[in-house]
Image (cartoon, rainbow, N blue to C red; front, side, top):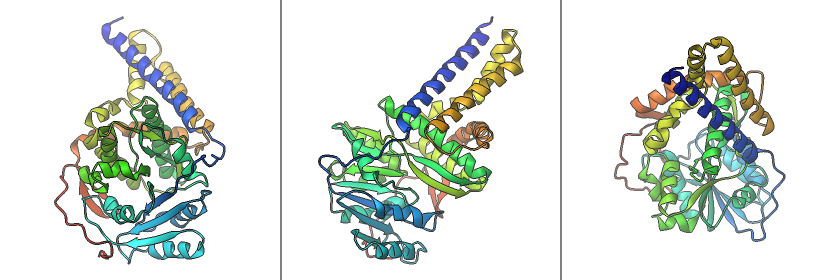
Length: 386
């Protein structure tokens, strides 16, 4: 047996082992849990929700903000323009829940090239409490949302986050997005978090206000194009850890086109490469494409049937992934094997694209991972953007 065959077999074995271990970790960290009771000390919390446009299920996801089983919280919705079509939705929800302290702030505080961060600035400044959660508008908040965030907090914690778990997809391409979000990206994030190298995820971020203020305030997150990459670096620079909540919060997807899924994944890949290039480099080994190719090469060199070997490994690889999805009650349909295989075929292309591409469009805003943040003068919160 040649050295190259041994190397291929070794690579296949190592990647398969990592695949199995990461699945076990994800099952433990993401399994369904009972309602989390209130902590002995329940500190008041501010929830800042930036809104922009009419996402699928937006009224439902925003309504969950008002249905939290927590005694002391306030809601601050932030929008850049009073003419945004989501404004009537937010105002209607606020009017329908007079018992919840909530407000809508309109304005565009230009502190960075990141429109989402700019949208959040006024909410951060208006927050009344020491704990501030920033949550995207397309996140479904369970009634124990705040309790689950606080339960992940430790003495060495600087930030608690949650990756999105895709749910309610409609059509093939939305199911493909579920395959990206759930059993691939969320699994990888929980594996990294369990190893003690958690990364911030902008879908939900719970800050202790004093920690971010000590680093220069919310403007410190303008140091990177992506606020979650900047958040990770701010927390680590303070000698603290980013932690993930046990069990990610869901994001309902609805219908997606392939173009939408591809653009989202290339945007995220380019941002990961720009923010953490050394951690991004091994992503080329993600998915089953290279392990299956190595298995075929090793089988050929060892005189074993190539097709049967590759098929057996593929069946085990995707079978374990489907078992994870089933165990944690994520979305699982007969389309899953097809979507998981298609995802893995796309991963090498995404990796290459991340190294050669710099520009992307987010909610109509042209952005670039290569551009430094320009010097911008923040506009007052009452400024209504065009």
